[in-house]
Amino acid sequence: MAVVSATEQISYEDLYARWERGNWRATEIDFTADSEQWQERFDAFERRAALWNYSLFFHGEDAVADNLSPYIDAAPLEEQKYFLTTQQVDEARHAVFFKRFMHEVCDVGDGTMAGGLAAIQPDLTWGFRRVFDRLDTMADELRRDRSKPKLAAALALYHLIVEATLAQSGQHFITGYLEQRDVLPGFYGGMRNVEFDEQRHIGFGVKLLYDLQREDPECKEAVAELLREVLPWALAVFVPPGWDERYATAFGFELLDIYEMGIASLDSKLRAAGMPMEELRLPLPLDLSSRERAEYGIALLRAGYLGEKVGPPARDTATLALLFAGVERSVDHRHAPRQPVTIEWDFADAEPWQLRIDNGATEAAPGRAAAADLTFRCTVEDWVDVSAGRIDPRMAMVRRKLRPSGNLRLLLRMQKLFA
Picture 1 (cartoon, helix red, strand yellow):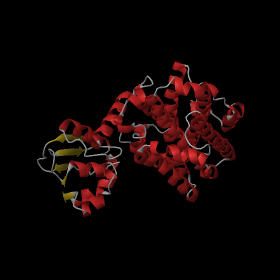
Picture 2 (spheres, rainbow, N blue to C red; picture 1 turned 60 degrees about the vertical axis):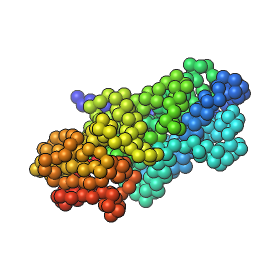
Picture 3 (spheres, rainbow, N blue to C red; picture 1 turned 120 degrees about the vertical axis):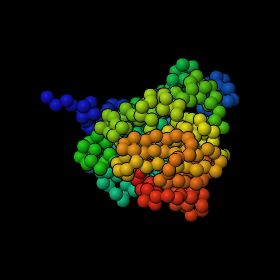
Picture 4 (cartoon, helix red, strand yellow; picture 1 turned 90 degrees about the vertical axis):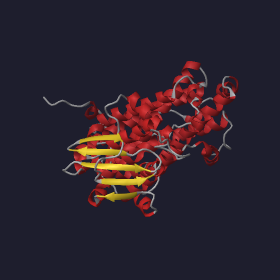
């Protein structure tokens, strides 16, 4: 007897029915007690830290409400379109909820949606801006291309990255400390409603992705390509101002906890959608636990290897080992040469590194190669800028920041060789 997965048992009709049963009114939440407790139960730094976090949610809810229409048009079935219509209503309601709280309790904005959004712009992080700029361009792409692979990539960005990885993790910790402190009852109740809505949205996204990848095998590669592009930005969304971890610890949890939950959530949702990470060939340390992956990602951000460029990256051997561990994992052996090859990085400001690729195995190590097939001469900073997507490698070569020599065929294969 065939085994039916949990995802297959979900129906679009049931998801719609849950929306009808779970309706709530953002305009009727009473923030009277919240206004008093905001001033009396939060100190100045806690108010600043909370506002930074809430600002990301406020802008995010408005952005996803604006960008959902092309998803409705691209959905293959009427039942899917109907559910997505309810989701757009939910997102608008969430934005109204955050706008009311930010203005009536926190005195942010002038009471209008435009005024509130303008007031929080300085709090939006580099990673947040990159992810939501990509959501804007994805909506435009989906208007032009309603194919199943493009819809799958769009769902991965919206439902798995924005909702399951970022929003759900942040919501969990916000409601956790509000409940523990027994504060902001209006905001807490509204956030719980938002959580329930988002769980429904994520369930729909996983279900539709599962159906799409079964119908069109190209959907998996479309999702993998999108995740390779967006994950480095998503990792930087919750980097606090000045790397001040009090923005998390002031409320009783560690920044690492948020990252761990987000990574675990993405892993489980992809698996439920029939696209486990190992099949997508993502350049992630899949041999590590979610917490260890979170530690690794934060270390790359702190070293300046990922995220916003705020200064020169770390160049010591131990930290460079983190960078080249990622280089090892990013090799796509489907495009590797049949014969063993060695690539060398001859850094002007650090010891050289080498990467050996041999029949499905890779090994990176410090030190000069005995006989390199391809050598890159550059600084650590210039290579990091190329690998982090801050500069196009072709432009780096034109400007002589990246000077390759050796096997030109291997050089031409580099874009396919590295995910």
